[in-house]
Image 1 (cartoon, rainbow, N blue to C red):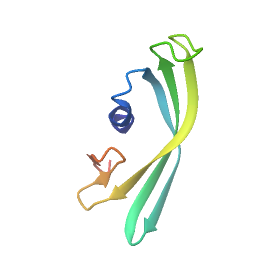
Image 2 (cartoon, helix red, strand yellow):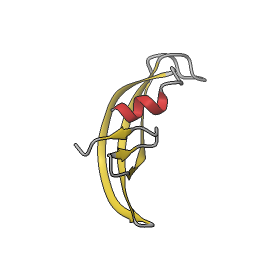
Image 3 (cartoon, one colour):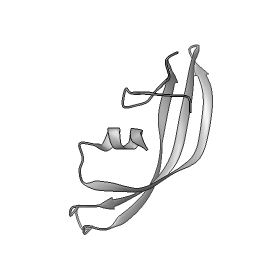
Image 4 (cartoon, rainbow, N blue to C red):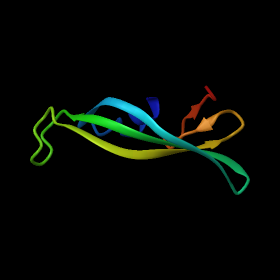
Length: 84
């Protein structure tokens, strides 16, 4: 997913193995449509991180908020994404 790569591009410590949508929630905040994309990500360490050796795969859950702008959904990376 592009938004994951855009928000983690500077880290260079992990590669995305998989990203799975677990839920989505559409809401309106102060009159602005918002969409929260909930996901589970599996990432592989590409460098030594503490006691974790390169190649270690971790799974975590998080979310990305998107805001409707009229031109598309703006993600947390400040980039526009189409409705599709």
